[in-house]
Length: 460
Image (cartoon, rainbow, N blue to C red):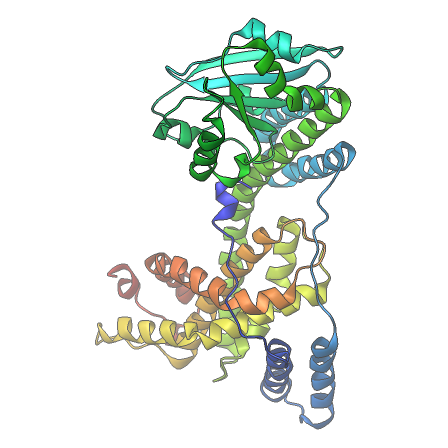
């Protein structure tokens, strides 16, 4: 997974082993609270009979098992289909001129992976100054009936800004890193960047066979665990080199399987890279949806102000924002699942005091200007808009984390909702002044009785 997407990952809280599903109880009572507000404040219908329907819906959520699953392809054909699906998503997100140019580049990279064929590729590599075995000796040691393309790279730099593994090495079917002794920091840094799913070994030059047992134990203690059992020895003797490379030679006898494994690895990387590009495009699309929806919510609340924090659940679950977001993220979740996710995040936002913080801050801004005071309806409308903004941001993060998941794990969401909201709230607070400037335009379009002077916003 790319760094861009990793930043959206959320570690679940460490919770005790509870026998009661408190998360589902929260959804049950939350549905009752929101239902009561809808019935009494908006529809103006007595809550008796309809309240039981709302309770029934909450009870259905309470009892329904909710699990998520992502089917990771295990074949080249599976990864190929998945990559084709991702390629199709660019068309609706990119501008036409950008799509034409970049689509050609992506198709070219895709085709290069699919067209891989024999011979197999194996690379021997080391950092500057390290000793490598003679190429002719290695070729003789792994020679067999199968055709092999062997590469030698003895100049990995001693200093690198990102320590990024070279693309030419990343595309090899197999890799042998010639490691000098004693160990150097530069070699450990390069070894940390060898892809975990790329078949690879470490080779060291050690002549004294009597002390080799102690040396390999010392090496295994210093190297990451992945290299245990993958340390090869060379001492300048051809017979010994043949013995050390026996396991490499055995694997090379399965060229079709090896090349298919490499294709899957490269297609997985290509898919992750495209998802990073897609996520950047999705975030741009989301900003427009977020800005539009928050002021639609503000308008609705301003038209019928109700002193109830639960109104955000209605604002977010109104179907507009989550439906558009689902299209942007190519999310195929059921509508009821989207509503549950939005409601869970809404409840977490209210519990963390996003409404209270935004309301108090808006009052603080007003108090700094004695000639102006926010009318109650405007204050509540702006708080609802800001809360919608925070919940929308957290939901976009959840969709990014669960991209490609056929049905999200809602039990995990209950554990992560507070963290998602806290992260979204902190990020949105950084742009508080930007939000206030947007609020100016919205307030100017409202009734003159509650129009707030533009200086109130611009001065902050």
